[in-house]
Length: 258
Image 1 (cartoon, one colour):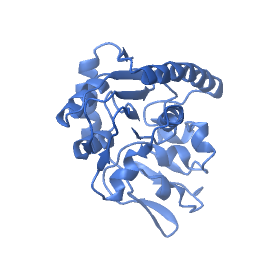
Image 2 (image 1 turned 90 degrees about the horizontal axis):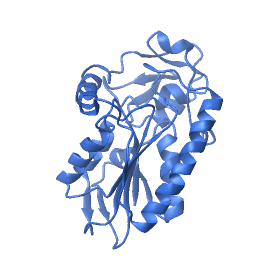
Image 3 (image 1 turned 180 degrees about the vertical axis):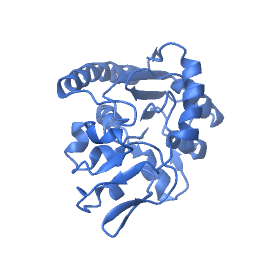
């Protein structure tokens, strides 16, 4: 059983690769949250439990923590549990925060992995070029082979890229991100918008609505997942002034779906 959070495809690709290799059931965390249903799941004996997601400001995405706080997992008796995070550089205190959240639900992590992938956070970074992206994909694929072997054998290990001053980055970065960077007011749409409605469909929090054939953000805050701005086919969605000149990023697995 694997739960994933993914906006531009990195984490979905990895979760699907593991799911296909392990024969695991795959769940989208945001789809489950938006469903409004009670988040109850039954874990079979010998079935691995996994969480796959990107790093947000050196922390797990807020949706992942919200999901873990609400999850009701029956049948869990210490089965092999893993977490895999994708990051653009370093992960800070991501795994420690996740471990703390899981422990409140009585779940212990057996293995923790982090893999560097192309970044998508347009407000702060510029996406890698195609050649650099392909190199990261290639390296990640090899690491996924190792991870799948470890899961099959129930090997416990920790391979992290938390970098220097991880605890400080995690606490300070998390505070700054949640306090000042989750607002939707900087988002706007240009005349290039065709009213296709893809952004409304893709919004992981479900707060984009089409009004007069243009997207409107119906909440003051969002997950800052960057799905809308990166996957707009016309590059019509912007975030402040700096985003206009920046390239967009989307993993090929999502480009094929869009």
